[in-house]
Length: 199
Image 1 (cartoon, helix red, strand yellow):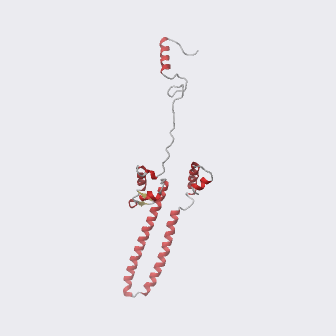
Image 2 (cartoon, helix red, strand yellow):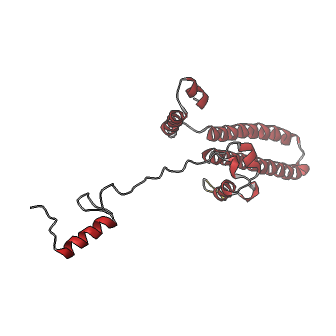
Image 3 (cartoon, helix red, strand yellow):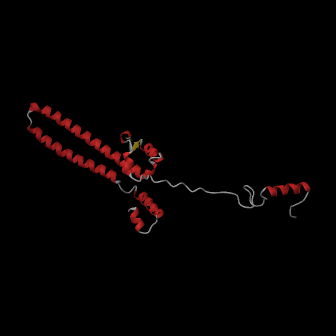
């Protein structure tokens, strides 16, 4: 469900954000993220292609004479290693791209493609499931005057105002006179011996 669909139902921006946040928290642990699904699906396809390729290669090896067999095996081993390296690099790039897009979405980037172009992708590397260096780069972009407009402004918390109640002294309850005039009158009455206390 998208923001536009929720707005069509008559929800304002605040309620729309609340519904989307609640929806994301509800399904977070219930479904496999599309990025993870794509990674697993890509790995499955690659495994199927590898089996098919190796089967063809073995059929070809049966036709090779004994003298040329060693060279053929070495050449095929190199080809398989190159293909495996290429696949691993492509999978790593896809994983990195998915992590970056997810982080930029969380950081409320207005245009993910534009912001991603400003990132030094070659400086990012995985440490387990964490992409090291990404948070610091996003923070710099959000704080820099020439790039912070690429992110939605975060709402500042509303300040809580506090002050004095009329007719009370600082921190008082209302039972004490307030102000210089009242203080002067109290000192004068005390000096002159005037009793202002009610019997």
